[in-house]
Image 1 (tube, helix red, strand yellow):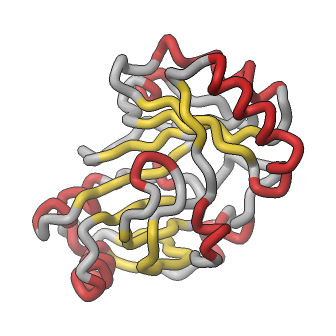
Image 2 (image 1 turned 180 degrees about the horizontal axis):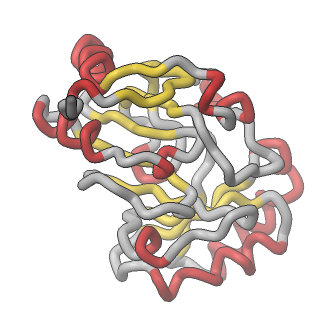
Length: 205
């Protein structure tokens, strides 16, 4: 028997209602659903426990929608892990049916399935983004762990759509050393912006 969209299940590491901490929607209330499973393998990842999908219980789209409705959130962010490993169309359709914006945070290493309202693409050197995802991005957010990451961030900008917002984000543990470099770069290249992890300052999820 074929499952309906609402019966489709995904491995969920955690879910919570908080404020978006980064990028264009920083400061907006949003419900986060963090899916398990990732093969990108960032050395500085702060949620390495999300990598193995088998370590996380499966939840249905119907359950996820109930979480979001109970919170009364107007934005739902699907993150990971690497959420684009999965076909997320059922989740997106269900969110649209209740009038909630659907956002995704992805490395762009996989084709993005689902008509998302906002795509935050944060490319990683560990598994390069693909063109079909780059062209869909609404914001392009490169985490700067080393000064070489700033130059690398330029590698893909010609594949982005003309309206995509460009961000450089200092990696939290390296902020002291890389933030001055990022500030100087943005001053010299004002079409770029700085994204800060404001949720770290606020001490919220």
